[in-house]
Length: 248
Ligand code: UDP
Image (cartoon, rainbow, N blue to C red):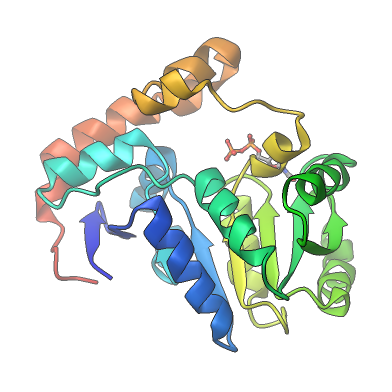
């Protein structure tokens, strides 16, 4: 897969369909694969934190979740065709997985969210097998029990929805302990959307690249984190060219 090096992070130049197809191919292989979907905030974090950049670059698939990342790829003259958000990839994967024998575990969100998401997903995707659910709030002393619960559930795919960077760090830390899992996807607030406890921005905002603006209006406290977007754009323009495109 072709990658674009955005400030030291090798983002795969895939569409939503290509990413979903790749994930289904991963499901055919008997080994662990991780899928992360960085946005500009996450790439800025990796730019400042080499250990976190290593975690991202260690993934089997990294897709561009955010219009900022798509624009960055254009500035770097290796344009990604479309934004491949975790939520959209997950929807395609769910359609494929529900027609298979694979079993999914839903991990993350406040208590009750994963259970509600399970209920809605089973309605929307007949044939889907959900092996277990677990909320995303836990202490260090509970981590082993959570791993056991996932392993004993028989799930071979997991959605890890703890928000970034927690989900990427959790997946990286536990990848050798997750015995049957073939694909772990870190997909942020997706369980909240599947559960109906959060709404996605209306299509108009997603299509026009203004989802960030919609979220800012709905959740103004995000302004601090969002200031990373102009910083990201400025850094890509001034420093982006220094990162070797054949590094990955
Ligand atoms: N979350 C969680 N455990 C935590 C922190 C967050 O399960 O310790 C969940 C939170 O309930 C939400 C999701 O992670 O469902 C994404 O959180 P947030 O919106 O903060 O992250 P983003 O999607 O913006 O990265």
